[in-house]
Image (tube, rainbow, N blue to C red):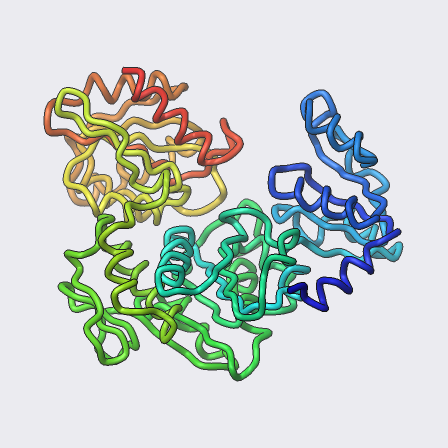
Length: 457
């Protein structure tokens, strides 16, 4: 059954001049949807038409006007402009268009307005995708019809006709998507917060403010799930309007772990030994998901997911074993904190790390590399920053002085260095502590290359 608000939106776009900034995978369904509903669409992208290839031809064939190349934002206009999530709201081109009467929005902002179902929104610096997947799987196993979207799955706005009032939309949200949101989730989750994306956000404070939009506009019947072990996540309860649920390692938390089991709202729910995916951070991901799905979940559904869910690709993903050496791909680790959590899963590893610098500090990673790494292979602009953090800790404590460090320029070279350094019983781990955008489109492309090289050894 179609949503009345969604029907009204489809009528609204008919005949309107609408511009979509960014011709990526997530925006293509939106562009086609707008065309199908009678909008006059212009699509803008920094790539040239030649670089877009068949995509450009396909869009022109359905009547889309293309503005491509370095000057793609020149004279940006339209009655309605959908910005790509990574574009700042105060970009000069957007501000000028707004002054000239354009309404600036995004696919996710419109979806929040027209979605007929309950929305569970998950954000945070780490653990978003795994937690979102767990929430989705637990609810599906419990008998609910759910829709997965946001940073994971497929764009939901174009599929709103498939969503009913009794369904549940489970959405992973980045700070970029949340920055200009004026409507919040029915159940909002903040897994944790630490400095991130400071190459885009002007400050850590601005980054936190963007995250707060996941709950700040909700009413008294809403729910906010916060992490008692993370100061910035837990502080959010002070500005929430609705019900607060907390998770952590203290019995007063709604969901807590004693190190052996997970308890929820007075009931033992799960033994840690039942959880298939490794790492203490994944215990936290389960606590988060349980808090988000209470009281909707069924006990057996939680246990079944825990025992069978093998994790999301590029997150401590086992690749293969060669001559007794195990290779793991954790390319999702695009910040120091993520790599720190991943290192906690292992004993001594041969670590491949480094990538694009997004302006966040690396100081804390030195201690964890010193204690968990036997051979360090660095690549990209953050390589020297990671090495400096290790050297600083080693100079202070003497720990880590035997770690061999190598700098590489390609992933083929890095993997061969790791292979040559490894002996039976060792673990080779890709965990970059940095974004992939210096060499790749995204962390998936980076992880897939690593897996391809390892599988070719």
